[in-house]
Length: 167
Length: 282
Image (cartoon, rainbow over the protein chains, first blue to last red):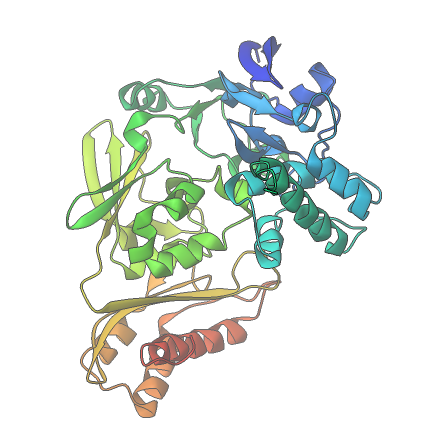
């Protein structure tokens, strides 16, 4: 089938690309744009490995036709924080929230969407928020620890600097 | 699996494209794309994307009822203040897929897919919801109970598009409950049941019951409803109602459960839903 032109923004960069109607977003990200941080696990919407942000919402790039992203703002793991590690990435590394690492980009993108909506989630809210992502290594405990730590750190960074002590 | 893709700008354009045949409609695509890419269904000539059509968007309080655009994603409906007045529906939406799926999957899509176990169907049936369909011959509305015709089959005529789901607001004092059993999280229901009713001085009124995954279509339990209307909520009533409910359904045995288990669970869920009306745990 004839290709069509897709225009969208990926990690802040304007993209213009000819894509086939049946190409999924993850295929375009990985195979055309060389953004291989986004992983393909099940390729049928079950595992969450391919989670990216489309217009700020966590969605599955394996279940999204690339052409559905006409004009959209897309963020992948590569664009989460371009110049230094995002607090989530740092926390996943420090807490051991990642073993083989295959599910990690999806977990981090979903966690980032969760924290944008709910900056101080309870342990239960973290578990519910990440229920669409599967990890076959960690048993989830360290992943939830990492998200808790990142949430605290991001809140500290957001909080206004304490007023200078009076003497 | 080569197919073309087209995104019409209006419902009118979408209808004229759909009338040409050789096409399939795509909204959220969370079921359709898996089926196409895993070759579980033949590729259509083209996909007509209806997810961004303005006529299928938005959630609106129309006074007596809530109008939900067919292409509204489940997560948007769950985030809308209206969901607080429809607790059984909200509970069902909350277990559908993952958050990533709910950000994309639409209410109209899950109904048009017509899976016997679609979680949104029993609460909508028990609420007395209708659907609005647009086609070459104009618009019509249909009771949701008339919409489902078989597994994967609906009353949609060729070229017709579901535009909205219409949910009458439950009357004051009406309670609604949703119960569901599946093997694991994010799995298709083995059995689901929704109940709407009023309970004053231990007497039932306005009873509407619906069950999923226990027949070729999600269905109202009409004989059980008729029996329960005006009855006092007693152990005897519950036992008799459970018996009738088990006769109202026609389940199959599959990998999720046997027909016997499903029939049994319909009775159990019904009793739990009604007991919840008196402060019991659903």
